[in-house]
Length: 50
Image (spheres, rainbow, N blue to C red):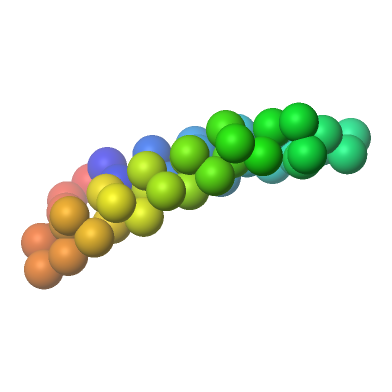
């Protein structure tokens, strides 16, 4: 579950960075990455099943 969400976030990040649009989407990208990091930290020590 986490890895599917992480992959979706990374795919969205790639889209947001396309065509030199990183600067205008920088806040959204940072938010996606922070959310992914927080979920990873919360899930440490727990093995997820797919």
